[in-house]
Length: 62
Image (cartoon, rainbow, N blue to C red; front, top):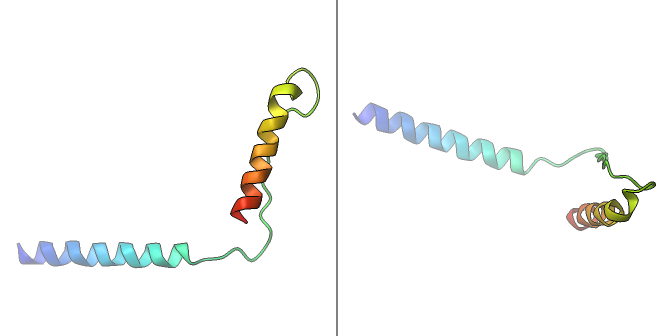
């Protein structure tokens, strides 16, 4: 029973360590984001604000 507890603790520590490593990684280059919204035609009326919200969100994250 004690071996199982030790393995669980080791797995938990490894997971937490891996999460810490992945969260601290920064992008070296610019990341391109594709947004598929109509900017012309009949759907432009409803989708232009969605494009603006996406761009505002990306700018806020950066």
